[in-house]
Structure formats: structure tokens, C-alpha cells
Length: 170
Ligand SMILES: CC(C)(COP(=O)(O)OP(=O)(O)OC[C@H]1O[C@@H](n2cnc3c(N)ncnc32)[C@H](O)[C@@H]1OP(=O)(O)O)[C@@H](O)C(=O)NCCC(=O)NCCS
Image 1: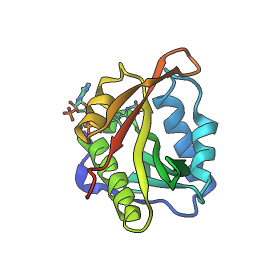
Image 2 (image 1 turned 180 degrees about the vertical axis):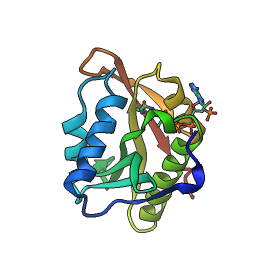
Image 3 (image 1 turned 90 degrees about the vertical axis):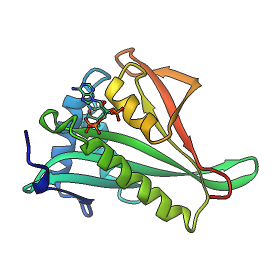
């Protein structure tokens, strides 16, 4: 079992080719039930304009990451932003020890800091409803299924949005 004391989380800036390769490798393995995500997720992480990539490192090695995107939107004639947790994954040895929770806390703190000066309508993410560890993690943070959005991943596995709204007046 990895020692949590050596694990740190931070925003990954100016991602190098090797960072992007590590993100691609973790994605290919973690999301293989849904399709081949190596190139797609590493290209999202490379978009440093619209996507913030936070990584978890253990003694310099990337062991997990979360990608948060910010999409301009207009809802009911109001301009604002939809925050999108585009991907979250840990390498297998680092799962089920609370690190996913830390990555989510990090991303939601980031969203909160942006809400201080921009309107964010809600935070969303896409999940397979039978992905029990992921769904329980997201529910713990107040995400709820939006069943009007059911679709499928490239492999045919169901894909559904989960959304987290903010309390009005918050
Ligand atoms: C989903 C993922 C990021 C969660 O991170 P994690 O560090 O493993 O999660 P945590 O330890 O914070 O716990 C998450 C939940 O998994 C549950 N869990 C713990 N051990 C488990 C086990 N051995 N098997 C299944 N679920 C387990 C916990 O009950 C917890 O739910 P709770 O909050 O209701 O207690 C991680 O498992 C992962 O990388 N999975 C593969 C990629 C993936 O599916 N990403 C999400 C795509 S939308």
C-alpha cells in the first residue's frame, strides 16, 4: 500500500511531453471499458486555455489526475460558465484509499474560487451508472444523475451526466 505522506497534489502547469504521456497511459488503462482514451484525454490536458489539470504525484511519479474544463454557456439569457470534470483517474495501486476524494475536493475548491468572480451555473461530469466507486464518490460531493442525458461511450456502455448545483444565495 503506498504511503500517503509522500503524495502531493498541485496544478500541473506547462505540461511536458512526458506529463502528457503519463496522463495518456493512466487514461488508456483506467477508461478501457469505455473506449481508447489515451490521445483524447492527453489532448484535453494539453489545452491549457480552457482546462486545468491537477495531478497527484508520489515521489515525482504521476499517480492520478483530475481535469476540470470551463465552458462558456448561455442559460435563460444569462451568460455564465458550466464547469466540467472531464476526467478523474488514479493508477490501480492508488485507488480506494481516499485519494479520489482529495482530487474532487481540489477541483471543487478551484470551481469555488472561480465562482468568486464568474457565474458558474453548475458542475457536471459524465459517468457510467454502474461504476460504483465513481458514483459513490460523486454522490458524496452532492452530484445527482440527470437521466435526461443518457448516452453511451464508444464501447456501448451507458454514459450519464451527473450535475451539482449550488445553493442559491451561497
Ligand atoms: C473513481 C476513482 C477516481 C475514485 O477514486 P478512489 O481514490 O479510488 O476513491 P475513494 O477512495 O475516494 O473512494 C470512492 C468510493 O469507492 C468505494 N470503495 C472503496 N474501496 C472499494 C473497493 N475495493 N471496491 C469498490 N469500491 C470501493 C468507497 O466506498 C468510496 O465510496 P464512499 O465515498 O461512499 O465511501 C478511482 O477509483 C479510479 O481511478 N477509477 C478508475 C477510473 C474511473 O472510473 N474514473 C471515473 C470515470 S467517471
